[in-house]
Image (cartoon, rainbow, N blue to C red; front, side, top):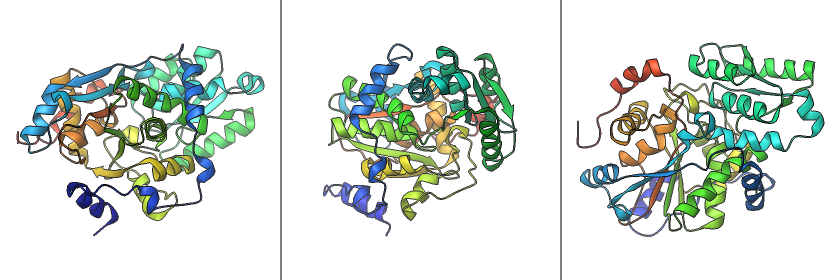
Length: 365
């Protein structure tokens, strides 16, 4: 039996969960972003980003109970709506904070990032907001709406390569040639601190929150949220969700170090090819568990959000919601549960196709 299978067994028995940091450790103690850094980031970015709303769904809570799951506190599932953040995803929080911590010389020279979409859009928008030139490298086959958004935000868009290795090589070439500062899409302490501002908002809106569920790509969002939530409210359990075909953090936790993968999933926002050193450190210290789900389940969450909550989410943004709806996350009766809807940048022309591929909701097959 795996460590996490044992953990879930103990949880159901009421014995309590053993933290990941007890069993999976690497020498990353110097790569934990402090609560003070997150609080400073929140103050720094407050006038630039949205304080996103906390939505809730009685229908989701009822469906969970009717499917044999627990009764949620207040009869509602809580949803942190980062899909209505500037640029349509949480990424703007971290990118704004990172840009605001650049030196004057770095701002003048400009910045560059590598991304399939959301980080590129966030970097482009954040750079424009503070008058910094931005270059974004996106892969061949990137979602057209995300490419167009980056250009609309004023960035120079370089479409290069079919995989991340080619994209990073081009980034290194352009950075050296032009003197640009690289804005890492997920593994940077100032980026993580910015994302952590969402965690502070969660515990303010839900002071008694018991469970927070967050999707994982490279791990920047969950690193910031988990750090903020667990430092303010240590009893809260934070669960990460990854797609089966893009389980870089799961492999990193199992191996104690980042592992390179070739991600394949409908959730293009969760396709980081490896976990970062900073994000791995945070996940080792603060996560209760990391749960892997399939694409059809992720799309079931997307379908529920559209049909029952009237919220447009991209597949990556629906992963945490899906995991809770389909009973993948251990929850006790009466607990307050918050899922993070991390993004809404779905290709409009693909919505019908995505909905058709969704798994039936539990008990509604």
